[in-house]
Structure formats: structure tokens, C-alpha cells
Image 1 (cartoon, rainbow, N blue to C red):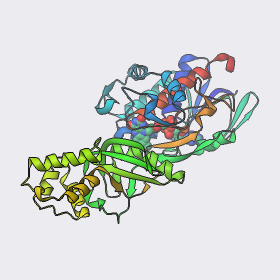
Image 2: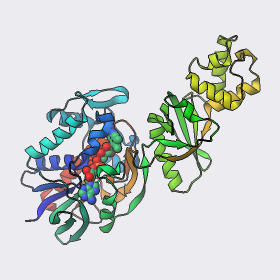
Image 3: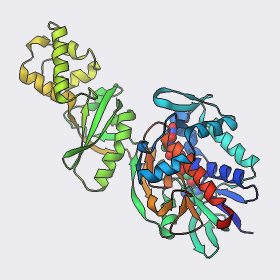
Image 4: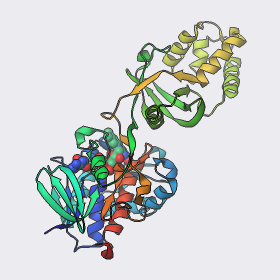
Length: 416
Ligand SMILES: Cc1cc2nc3c(=O)[nH]c(=O)nc-3n(C[C@H](O)[C@H](O)[C@H](O)COP(=O)(O)OP(=O)(O)OC[C@H]3O[C@@H](n4cnc5c(N)ncnc54)[C@H](O)[C@@H]3O)c2cc1C
């Protein structure tokens, strides 16, 4: 007997699709196939093993990739309040933390995964773990899935195979090949929410800053003009940059490089201040403590190690009384603090990326149902699509919302 619905990938999006679909139609035979022996690896590692399930406020502006209108439509299928209720009903109440991030009260990602798996079992979703789908073909009326556990037929198929980030979790990009075989186009994938590597020979020897974090604004310059500014906390590491500001900006850098554009990142340690405002701020700092050393004055609101590095790089004497700083020196200092070019030479790649930017082109999917416009009966959900969210629970919200949307499309009887 062919299945009604075969879901390829039992990650966040696949598990949620199975639950929503069976809730809408208890007669549909639904089977989850996953290449991993234990599904849900990414849920387990997410949010530092605490799983940032969603965010109190989610709009299309929190995402990149496919069109804003299509993303908005999908997000509307499952507003955040319903996500919160969905998890509360599964026995996983959520609480709010900084920047609107919602975590399980237990602070255990394992509880999120176990609740989803338990709901699948309770709803009679069939599961086939350790079942890798190698090829997918479409014949009139049904799909044939060539898997590591034999041939499987289904009248509808959901691709929930994720992107390429953390490939050891099982999401290694094979979903793109499956979609391509059925006529879909793939927006070239690049690592996103990924730490950035700095040139060790750069003017700012970053290794000495390892472990230092501070508020920052990073500007992305593409072909000579600023295309994006990201604010947040920046963490210096032995290899380069991490922390929310670096992770959020990374997809812009990797995308520009992939497109062969001239790209540069500049750092401001005074987020939101222009060069002129940074200069005025420096003057105020000096005026407040004219006898203090330059190092002390700057360390008033910046990490001391960062101040030391910047002064060294500018060849300014850290021990000089601040009031003796020349106009030219102050100018160079304000410039360095408001617009320091970061010598980024690469990213840490998919092994360290939280998500993949790029994927199946969104216009090829009906945003009301997640059904392919090119291959009727094929549905696509989650990260396999060309949609990537910023840090803060947005990527999971995309998984839940696209799953809810797909479930409606899958269970519309006329389509089966
Ligand atoms: C370290 C880390 C931390 C993260 N933290 C957060 C966070 O706190 N909040 C947040 O919102 N997002 C977070 N993310 C991102 C989030 O985990 C993903 O966006 C989300 O899991 C995507 O869900 P998905 O179901 O689309 O894909 P995935 O979770 O990648 O699941 C895809 C599944 O498909 C299976 N599969 C793939 N190909 C095949 C095949 N050919 N045959 C059979 N099975 C296949 C894989 O084994 C996998 O189980 C984090 C990601 C990482 C890597």
C-alpha cells in the first residue's frame, strides 16, 4: 500500500508537519523517514542545548532569502502565540529571555525533541529511522522514493531535509538534489549564522582579544556602499569573530563572496554613532578626565584589551594624558572606533554554521500550501527552502510555520 504522505527528514520541520497533518486528518497514513539513526540532532544542539524555540515577535523582516510577501504569508499560518500554545499542549511551556527569545522552562532541548516525538507516536505517525532517501521520482498519481531501506511509494511527499549546516547531523544538502531532480532551482547555498575568520596578520592582532566581548555595529560594504548594518554583541575568538553581531552579519558576507562581489566589513564599537558623534563622544570623555591616560579614558566604556590593541595599531601612546591627544590623533581614533575594517578572510563553514542561506527557490512553492508549483504533490518545508532567519528563534519559527502551512495543503482532500 502506498503511503498517503511520506515526509523526508524528521527534524523540526518534518516532525511538526507530521503532527499538524495527522491532527487535521487522522485517516491519512503518514510516515517520517530520516537518514539518521536518531532524528532531531539539530534540535538537541540548538540554543546551547536549551533550544530557542521561537521569539515573542516574528515578522518577515527577521528573514532573508525568498520574497517578504511569501514569508509573511507562511508566518501567518502559525502566529507565535499559537506556537507557544502548541508547545504548552505538548507539555513544554516556554519562557521569555533577552531579545524576546523563548526557551523551554526546563531549559532542556531534549524535552522539546521528546515532546515532538511523543506527539508523533501518540498520533500514529509511522517512523522509519536510519532510512536515507537517495532518489525521488514522480509518476502520475504517486512518488517513488529510492531509500537505503528499499523502495517506498507515496501519493504526496514532503521534503523536510534541512540545509547543509552541521552536516554530521544528517542535513548534508542531499535534499537539494532531490528537489532538483523534480525540476526545482536552488539558490546557491552559503553558510549563515556562522563565525568569521580573521587574517592573523591583520593590523589588529585579534588572538590577544580572544574571549573579549562588547557591543558593536558591523557595516557590510558591497561594491563600495553600505548594504546592511547589524548591531549586537561581538565576541573575539582565537580564530576571529563570533557572537550575535558576527553571526547575524555572516550571511551577507558569505553571499557577497559567493556572488563574486567586492565585500568588506567595518566595525564600530559605538553602535549607532556616526564618525562625528564618535568624535564628540571622545571629546566628552577627554573633557571629563583630562589628566587620566588615554588608555584609562577609553577604557571607561570599552574593554581594556580592545583599547590597548587599537592604540597599538594606531601607534598612539596609551600612557599619554588624554588632554595631550592632538586633533589628528583624535580624528584617527574616532575613525578607528567608528569604522575599523575587519580583515575577514572566510567563515568557519558548514560545520559551524547554524543555518544555510539559499536553497529551493521560494517562488517555486505556493506559500498558501507549501506545495511545489512545478511538481504537484511535492511539498517543501523548513530550511531546505531559500529562507534564513536571524539569530533568536526565528529559524525554528520558520520550521513550525511552514509545517503548519504544509499540513493544510497536504490534508486538503481534493488534492489527494
Ligand atoms: C548548533 C545549532 C544551533 C541552533 N540553534 C537554534 C536555535 O536555538 N533557535 C533556532 O530557531 N534555530 C536554531 N538553529 C537552526 C535550526 O536548528 C534549523 O533552522 C532547523 O533545525 C531546521 O529544521 P529542518 O527540519 O528544516 O532541518 P533539519 O533540522 O536540518 O532536519 C533535516 C532532517 O532531514 C534528514 N535528512 C536530510 N537528508 C535526508 C535524506 N536524503 N534522507 C533522509 N533523511 C534526510 C536529516 O537527517 C535531518 O534529520 C540552530 C542550528 C544549529 C546547527
